Length: 149
Image 1 (tube, rainbow, N blue to C red):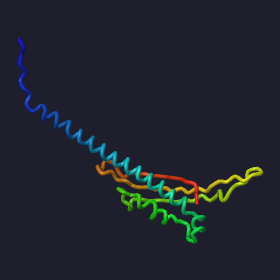
Image 2 (cartoon, one colour; image 1 turned 60 degrees about the vertical axis):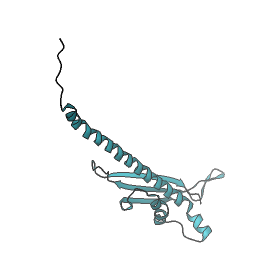
Image 3 (tube, rainbow, N blue to C red; image 1 turned 120 degrees about the vertical axis):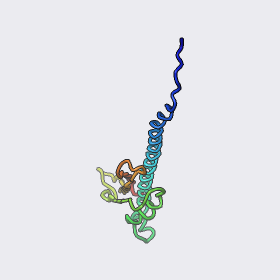
Image 4 (cartoon, rainbow, N blue to C red; image 1 turned 30 degrees about the vertical axis):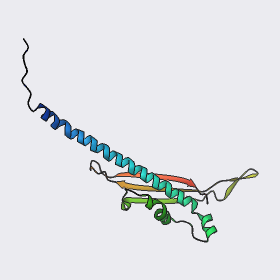
C-alpha cells in the first residue's frame, strides 16, 4: 500500500525567500565587480594616453615649434582628463615624471650608444563601490614611455 503524501503548501515560497535574496546579491555583486574592472581599465588607459602625450610633447617638440614643453598640468588637461568616461575627476590624482638622466646618449667603448629618456605617468583613482560593501578602493594605473620627440 502506497501512502499518499500531503501537499507541502508554501514550501516553494519559503525556499524562494531564502534563495532569491542571495541570488540577487550575487548578481548585483557581479555587476559592481564588472564596473570596478571597467574603471580599472579606464585608469590604465588614461595613464597610457598621458604617457603617450608627454612623450611627444617634450623639449624637442617645444624647440621645433618655439613653444614650451608639456607640463604635468598640460598632460592632465589634454590627455588624461578627456579619457574619463565614468570616473569622477575630483577623486583622481596624477603624477608625471620625466627621467632625463640618459640625455642625450652614452658612450660605450669607442662608439656612442643612443638611449632615450623616459616619461612616467601615474593615475590614481579612489573608487567607492556602488553597493557600499567595502570602503574606497584605490585603483592605480602607471605607464612609462620613451621620449620620442
